[in-house]
Amino acid sequence: MSIAENAPVIDSDEVRRQRAKRMEKLGSWSLPVVVMLAALLLWDRIVVWNEIPHYILPGPGRVWDSLVNDWGILWEAGLLTGKITLMALGLAIVGGAGLAILFNQSRMVEMSFYPYAVILQVTPVVSIAPLIFIYVDSKTAGMLLCAWIVAFFPVLSSTTLGLNSVDHNLRDLYRIYGASRWQKLWMLQLPSALPYFLGGLKIAGGLSLIGAVVAELVAGTGGVGAGLAARIQEAGYQLNIARMFAALTLVAAMGVLIFAALSLVSHLLLRKWHESALSRET
Amino acid sequence: MQPIDQRPTVLRMSNVNKTFNGSVVALNGMSMTVGQGDFISLLGPSGCGKSTALRLISDLMVPTSGKIDWEGGHEVGDLGVVFQEPTLMPWATVAQNVWLPYRLRGKSYASVKDEILEALKLVGLEKFQNSYPRELSGGMKMRVSIARAMVTRPRLILMDEPFAALDEITRFKLNNDLLELKAKINCTVIFVTHSVFESVFLSDRIIVMAARPGRVIQELHVDEGYPRSEEFRTSAEYAAYCRQATDALHEAMGVAA
Image (cartoon, rainbow over the protein chains, first blue to last red):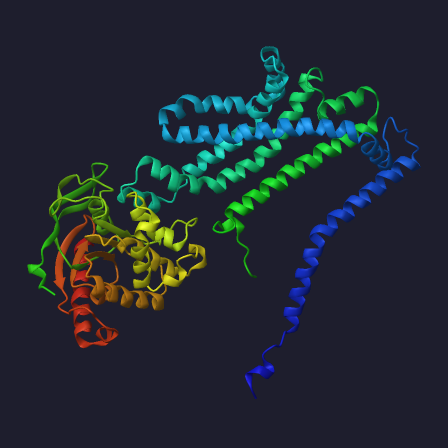
């Protein structure tokens, strides 16, 4: 009997494993969709059966209508909120990573300023924001500052952790080979810190959106036009609950989009070498 | 190859002491002359100061007293090191990892490409130059680490239990390959190990050390030229040397107990 005759036998265990794998793949996107559809249906039925007036709780159909009819207003508001969020995130990256490198290079600077970075972080931004808008004339600058205060800390703390997490032997190796401080920073510490930085970045993405929303609520609508949070507030005053839900949906979608984009960036940067990006055969 | 006592000196340790926290004596009065082409094993139980000796030679520590002198002074690049772990940069390819000692001296990749490929060829990994460390097995990673240590042809290579974490089959294979490498480029090596068999198979000088306090007990010479083949491992001479080294090690442990 030759080997070829009995080689391609797939036993029943293997078949079961493959089926389980396929089911899991299917379930990972279909189950959340099913849950959402069920929730929407339930929501709709509750509204209809209990005859709840739309100024208290609109059904999903009305929210959809609002999303379509008010698209012009909402899109413009979304652009503004998105712009503030992304700019704040950009500043958080530059400021957070920059401070982390500065702290890492100079122990004196770290000892002097790190406590204040922590204080800035633990003080709720809602309580700082009104003060900011008293002293900062430009609304855009004020909103950016608010969003930055919330977003920079995760970048700072995780990058700091990363810069200090260099493999000890590699550190010794660099010393033995006479690396300069900059070579060590550029060729050893920054690549080591990258996975940590990216982890902090994902958190900062969500936080900068929160910061932007809070800043809008505090700043009000005058001057630079209204963002999504301001639209939610305004629609609330007008008892236009459907538009509140529509704007809320957009805010949530924006948060998901930012998270997905940052996850993609993280994956692309780490997939070749980092443990987190490896998939193992089971 | 010249007899051991006629080789030009590379480095001299004279009465070197290292004490931690003012009381723990890690190394007590170690003296040793390293000759060019020596393959020295530092053999001893844990705590005998063999790793401390390597850290002192590589300037990662300063001795509490005593002197370590390089013949004719020394500069960065006189030394290559291999640690117990491969210690590769996971974000860099194999070739980029081997480039490191040159890169830290400001040499571009293009200018040392030939040396890098030559080093990888010597450890049999030229086909893997563009792979990332995670794609390699433990033994292959260690080969990259060895290629990196020798790429600049340093005057001295330090190896701190490089094969201790590998399985025995891989370990034997790497022992053979290291000897082949030694025969090809006649490098000078200080090799830390706690394996009697490894030390006899690889080295021509075995320095047996004892613990608490860490110190040199005895030096044995293995008068077997390079290249050494797998047959040496099964020869009567090999067994006799192992016996001798084992006795010395027992003596070291007995004194320590």
